[in-house]
Length: 361
Image (cartoon, rainbow, N blue to C red):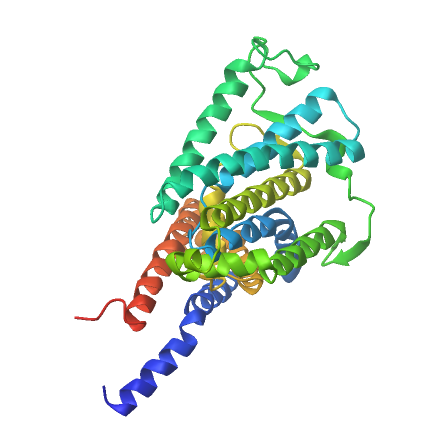
């Protein structure tokens, strides 16, 4: 290859990690301009979405590190959190103790479920993403069976108010009551024209620091080694299956914490729909931040949650202003989510070709 071509290829490889974030930045600026919204509206929506979604993105880092790609089974972690919150609402615990108990229950369930998922994914090496997606669908259906049919028949509730009028099945929507005011008066700051709490932001930052510390620990080293070359990792003494299982357990546990923060901020527990599509939108947001199916970092998490959710927030308004049809904006949201994954997939394939795995024709 000529020298000038090699230089050009190196230059392209240097900036290829920024292609997706730059693309989303341009789309976000265009959408905000078309939507014609003020900064206070964007800041308020971004704060809420930051609280609700950031930890979900953190949950995807470990499986990517270990070479398993996007873990679409984080839905199971969210389901563990939903189970925990239904139990807390059923028992009728106070907001403070209820928050702690829901965290404990969801973590215990996440470890159990994560261990089961890890065992399944270890038997599906090379096909983890599609397998995790199927696991997510299966888990969601089993969950719905338990709460639509089991609650009120096999499971007798303490609080009959959470049941449907027929006495079987949990209501589709439960008000979490005073649980939503848990952080209401803690560390208040003014953001735009609203007073918001810094407490959940601090929780998220602490979780991000924890994730960063794990990635730099011995466990993180084993994850990186496994992700780089699974066969070489085995030869140097890394227990590959155990490392992959730990990554999934951590991912599932973080997803359960994320779902509790999501519901606490939202104020309502959508029993049967609260976890739907979160895997796709979380994956899209992380990829929008510059992550790939082989590499992800804390930086990608924070860039992705800001860029993706600004666009996600203003797209319906932009669609309404441009096409005089708000429905187009809603379709645009789904297009952005799935389009991001396709675009990132194309960039991954292109990167593989640059690294010599494939060649252009």
